[in-house]
Image (cartoon, rainbow, N blue to C red; front, side, top):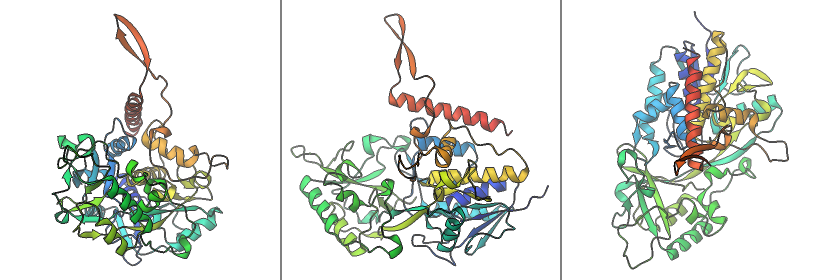
Length: 466
């Protein structure tokens, strides 16, 4: 049976994943991407699914971390994003990080070669034509002004926005390894390798001097439309973190715990702070500065970041930057199938829905694609159980968030175990002195139990479609 195409606006992680899911369900897709005819403040290439902030998909631990569980669920549902992430991964401890160029090129090639996917380049300015009866809007944090204005006018809500930020990338061969050393925090590395990160130590005096330089450094001016836009805590500029207190960074991205400097004189104090760099490409020639997203001007970045021990002669492949990130008030304007209540032919996916993070964005694209495919095929459009990472996340953004004025406004959210329904039984049995006793689960045990429950429930849900 031939189906009418589903239109997808936006070729980022969410749009690419949605297109893949639709095509593999036998539904033709027309994927609209405005680049390169219309550029954005953050993108640099014409590739689909380009990564513009970090190259990390974060933890890949599916039994102890909610994002790791999301990874596992996406793999089970045939995710293109996860398949390409696994294909183009680079060392990053227990996290999944990718060679960003090879990853985006792989996603683009896979979609270009699929017979049911048509890629059309050009901006969709305003709402899509009325004869597009099924549309997924996955325009991400950099939605063009005409489309953004049309969406706001349609749903009667001004929406919200926050700043997202980009960390600098350094050429590895410009780092001074007489000072730097390789190690993962707590020696937790991928495949038994405990040396996935480059570490740069600071004494207390060096740290305080560095923090003051961040505070004094010249920052880029905000554009008129960016003023008074709140930051998102999950991607806070390093100089803004420094403004919150002189010790903020030493307990945040520059915390020294779990790291041991092999070059240290045993008679001197351990590092007061440590800057970490994570591999950014498969060749291992580029490393990004973890947590160093910034609004500092380029000149200030070059000057200040080269005061970090080990970066005296650093050669930066890319300096940091910031851009505005726009999202809709999903609990108000979307139904539980990610459709706009005011115009059900429009379905939303990715960061524009108010999820934060690469993987979360792709996961919402995966669900949007599956839901649109089910509708097109005349099949039930059922969501995964809320006990799964996918179910917990979509339930939160479409109705689980308390934004009634008493509990604050809807804000972007990463997947976390706080979004999952509590376990029915949090006590476990153990034997002591020949007797069976019960005790309350520890935090780590609860997370593992939630993760195992989620995977089991996802497996049962997927079995319904076989």
